Length: 86
Image 1 (spheres, rainbow, N blue to C red):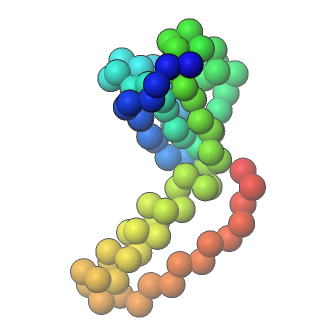
Image 2: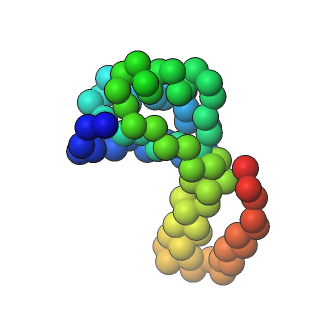
């Protein structure tokens, strides 16, 4: 495996963007879901691939959005992280 210098990230079900990540010169790609084709594509292109779970990769964006809405508009926001193994 080669050194990782540039990482592409797409939360949730972003496995379909693996070819774009390779085209953009990424050495690694992180997303939430995986398919058999994703693994083959990563291997063929010499790309490190990490599937971290759909829910796990999306929760931080939603949390950040809530924090921004609270700060920007004074909304009372409470983040509820419900465990989801998928």
